[in-house]
Amino acid sequence: MKARLSWTATIGLTIVWMVLWGDLSIAAAVLGLVVALGVQVAFPLPDVPEMERFRPLALLHLIAWVGWGLVKASVIVSIGVLAVRRPVQHALIRVPLRSESPFVKAMTVEVVTLIPGSVIVELDRHEILLHVFDASSPASIQRARDEVHDAERLLVRAFASRAERARYEEVTA
Image (cartoon, rainbow, N blue to C red; front, side, top):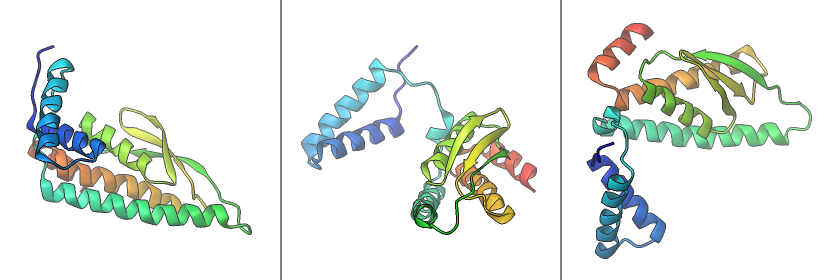
């Protein structure tokens, strides 16, 4: 496999290096850059076109949505665990995915699993099997489905090609 250098990966790996060392100096940045380039040459990554054409504003919207989801879900799960009067009802639900992009599907699984209260049990070609912490009502189950679709939609907006976005909009319309 031929080494493929990516600006996105180089910048990302350099930032990770600096954060891990806890040093925001120019020397740490230069050393991080050398390490980032070395990692990409030694361990070539497959071509992931979505990572080269992300939209910064859509990515910020996705990050804000995930951050809010983390806070909201943490509170809901904490209340559910601490509630002694009402037992929590769990469920396994199937949620169809609408994107054809393997990258978007994989990232949707990652984002949904990151937020407390749900875990992906299985990823099929066109749907996921999702464990839901709060399945006390049809509305809460629908909310879980909607959150998966919201994550997928935000990922399509942030990373998908123009053609994939258009196809996704046709499917969801």
